[in-house]
Length: 113
Image (tube, rainbow, N blue to C red):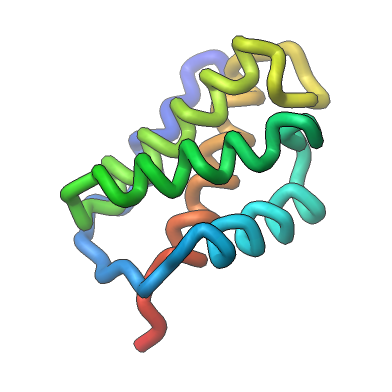
């Protein structure tokens, strides 16, 4: 697992974002964090959603790979600051887990065809 690279598994294709607002972001993350571990701590959840909403609004790309890397890094950043409750201390496992969560998030943000 130590030689795992989430970028090897990431599609580099472009996608179209659906419409989203702060409430949709909250719903997406509520469902994701109910399903997957780790979880953003309750007192930080609103701030996390706001940070993601701002990031999504500022990010001027439709490249899946870039979105997934940024979301994965955002989760890592929250973990390093202690705002994320994660099940493992192994960074390689966390990186893979965060990449899976990023994949789910990108799928939720994709415009329905």
